[in-house]
Image (cartoon, rainbow over all chains, first blue to last red):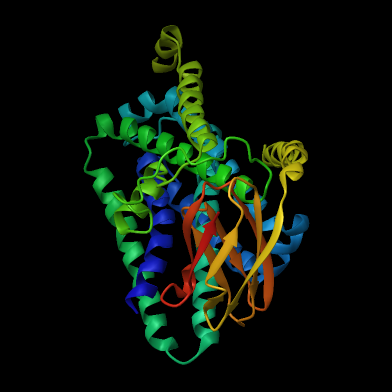
Length: 275
Length: 111
């Protein structure tokens, strides 16, 4: 039972972290509740579909369908998170200043929320499909099923509590700093996702250069442990990263900083938008 | 926007695939039955790209996972799938079936 709990909990916290951070990053934006709910619901639906068609997906692209789907899902999420941070670099100041008021153009805000809902949906889809398959296996396996199922459901509940705590924890940050914090978290999240996409492309044989392990910290901080999986979900910790993964990770950090810099309003723009 | 990203991803995959295929590979396999691997030790050549086919004879899905081999793949029940890894340095690399990790444990030995 404990094993089942851990497996499901580990998957849920990955999606839960993302939901918690997105909720905190959209603090004060009207309509964000519906968008995030929409993202979660879409993700659950998608997860069931991916699980249902697991066989067909696996066989697509001469056996690399699953890897390509994972890499594409991660890649899209990375692009959306980059866009979010660039958007925040432009509008964050207004948002922090007018947290309680509707300070933004509605259509602008909508596209931004849609992008984040997509990020949430993709995260739920990816982690959720594994949970669905795992629970399906338990139910189909029979025998000791009910105990395992109870463990799985507890893991699900625990993950939901973790999500709420992430959000509440971030809310405790003074509003002056909250967007700075979520921007950093989202940057690390995106870099980690990109590095994970590299792993899937390597596994499928599409990107094998610099595939050697750079270092091994599995003795110190195993990725399968709770702290290891938490860090994996948060900042993309990998116990044995490849050279290519490290390069892509650092490139995303650099690209993110660059995009936020060019998106940031110039001084004259700020004066105009404030009046 | 979404279409564009998809197109970009597939274009990238297409370009990359031409570079990757050349490196393959020795054909090897491992079977999952009753949530156990058979054989539990898989010998593979070191310093070479390896392609391992995982055959799942159980009716339930399994996730073939190894952090040291850097693979993670769901194998639906009664089906098989291939994962690629390496080139590996000589040594031992653990893998497991994540959905049944109590029993589904195995090791790749590169030599």
